[in-house]
Length: 258
Image 1 (cartoon, rainbow, N blue to C red):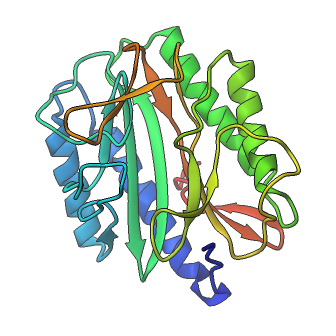
Image 2 (image 1 turned 135 degrees about the horizontal axis):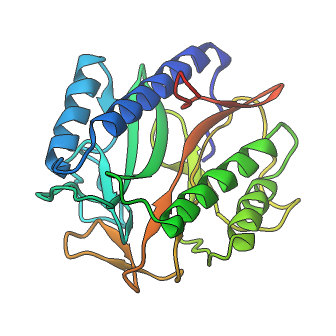
């Protein structure tokens, strides 16, 4: 089922998006060499609770994970790209960290992810990975408007990733959000334009390009959640929640400085 948001609830969606963006920006500023992933999770928990919001992750138990997830944020490091389960690991200089967060405010969900390098040891390859996902995200958002098709978004994202030289995994991708975190429709990171569901005002979508440096194959950690590149290569992930409006796409999870 595809959920269309009542226009009266759009302010709640904006509130949820702003909170997610603010938490991710705060966490990015706090993360440095020596930061433990469990500290990041505790910080996220504190900010969610203080805001009076609800975590979408703690009790989440989908078919693809060994649930419930039991934490407040996904922390994926280096070759981990999705659903990284926080654990006792302290970041070192040059770690490529992806943070993925979803919260519900007043019954409406927003979902976003960022990737960045911790410390000073940033490589050109890591920068290219992150830039490709960010550029693909912008391309997908640019074509999202009433009357466009889901395939238009998938094609725009996939074109950027492919032209940057990366292979694309379509098992996991973007998705609808609304009263719950993961809803129809699935938004693959590659596709054919002019195909699929027709976008309409009130549709909320979380678009999330992600790539692995030299493979499209995933493996799952023994924790049952963390997804890694099969070759051990580096990875990156970017995500925004958007609302389809009469005027196009409104990005709900932008930071105040963006």
